[in-house]
Length: 282
Image 1: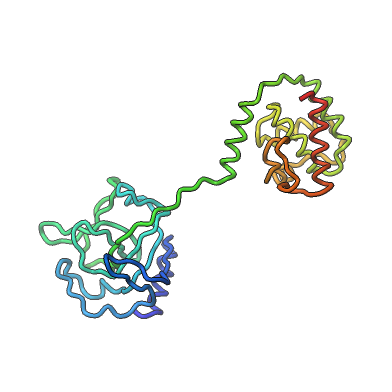
Image 2: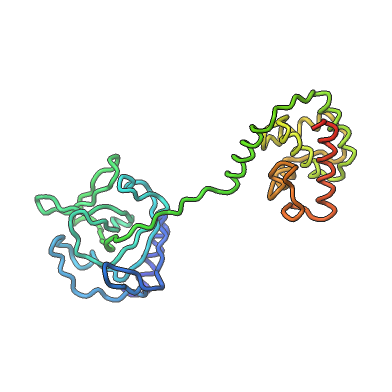
């Protein structure tokens, strides 16, 4: 397989949802390092076990691909994992192989039955084993030797949300009357010069468990009810835009060095929030 053919192979892999990558450093293969790079002709290969024609084993070198689908889930190989494929075409029962069947790429386990017929067997009982026949367009691209597990990581935004929820539950319950909430909103409204400054009011009400985290729509309706004629009523996209960095935390944990606004603007937001707390008595 020449370089142009290899590029075409990678394009087909990508269209199928795979992510092929060439290694640019030596990779371990058993006890010997194998240099990744452009493929060369694999030469004459004797397929003692499979009896496939040479056209069915047409790639050389080492490369990795990302796994998609769930046909190998019982083997512990899941979507997002990567597998290393090497040009070892002496396939034996139980070997993991990367194959192309009628234009579709698949990762399966190789097996030859008692009648000498080759199969590709998924490791998920909801899929059937695939019998390889001469009338299929089949290419075995190599043997899988290593599985690189997908890094286990949880988005920090999700963690922050869960921690904030727990912190709110840990806070002592405060009974704040609707009259006091209405009074606070109307009073603080006089300090609001732009719509997104309402975020400071929203944050205090969340901290006090008056409204739920991310209930922007409920907060907006609350403000519109109290000050319907205000020139700068809050908008959902403006509030969401401010819920980042330290502003995503309780007001007491806001930091001027880690906020979506700086300088005098940060002070303005902080003053609005503190005024809201003062009126609510919290």
